[in-house]
Length: 88
Image (cartoon, rainbow, N blue to C red; front, side, top):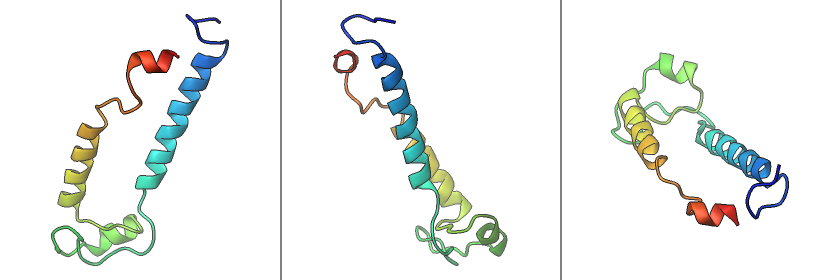
């Protein structure tokens, strides 16, 4: 399927790259290593049940929720460039 000035398959390649980028971002956000006993943000104790359920946890529930809200707000911006740059 030809779209504008792009070559055949370019649209699919762009979609595949977007999915791959999202997967890499999600994997990079997964906790790694040993869980902390105290939150690295507010120094509150992280409950043992949370540490067992989520190996590598670094924050308490409240601080993690704040982080995720901020990340979600930041994800609303298109950082790949303008629409015109994606068509070339």
